[in-house]
Image (cartoon, rainbow, N blue to C red; front, top):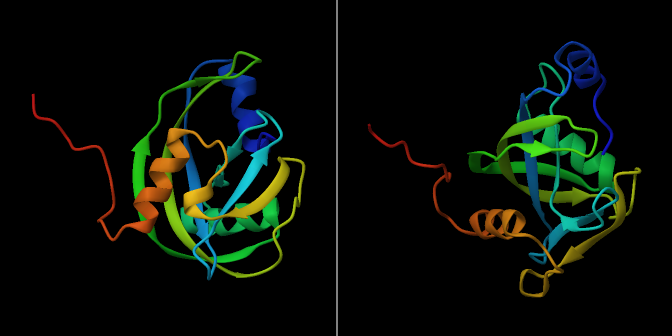
Length: 159
């Protein structure tokens, strides 16, 4: 996945040290209840569509932008599904990031699903009961998006 320019600027000063960053994930559903997935070019794995908001960009706006940039599908955000601090990730170049993910349920409103940039090898719609090999991160978000449960978050603990 291409690294945003503002991250390159921060990395010039921070080196490989941990960066705490916002992230968004979009669970996009079509009128048939299928889920939009992309097979990532960096890992070769199927995944939900997501990305990093630009400075000052609202998370829901970022979700809509990322979906269209990566898949050519236009969507609208319906609701927040979950908010979660993810575990730190160390990339091949040694950079360490940790994301605060906001996941949105989105509804497709136009466009034809296709590979629309270099972040995906394939893009497609999948029935919920016929998902490709998808990690628990994606499966949990899809489950939450399909439920009427309130926004999921890790409960606070008292000390």
